[in-house]
Image (cartoon, rainbow, N blue to C red; front, top):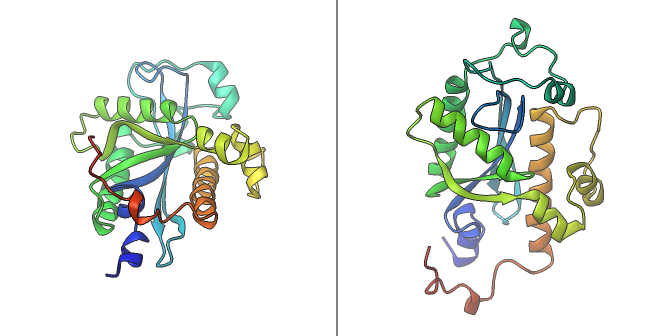
Length: 222
């Protein structure tokens, strides 16, 4: 593989990390006590010219874990009327995360990456719920970095001067329907588009690949 082609890979672009876009819908703000109700993951891929784009989408409705706290205000916000309704087709946290992690590991390996990193809008929130659910399910093979994330709220503030997802998408020229918002599937797909747009915009502006003198990893201590 030529040097140019090597730079147009996920492992080179993100220093061995495999970015996965995540959004969750929950029954509150406390990841330890409040129910995780919906999760979506979108993996990413890079074409031969180095442009980032969405790859695989996995989406699950989640049954509240035993003893979970459910706040009515949260349900009013995300539009999930009855978290226990069989019509939701909900699965356990364990079942959903096992499927998501299995796909992540498969694609991560294919891309030559060493670890997954979560991409999310206000990422600390989503990351905390995924980590708490993984702990409850006793999943030892969690592919995500334990604390590092790519936060599209912060990145959008830099790239577009907007931190709200809907406004950042509008500024980036990405269609956003507020009536569809607060669905994990819809929000994840829009967040994935937004992250790809930010990364690709930086490339268009000449920010990637770096100059040869800037690619020295000798000072990397992590």
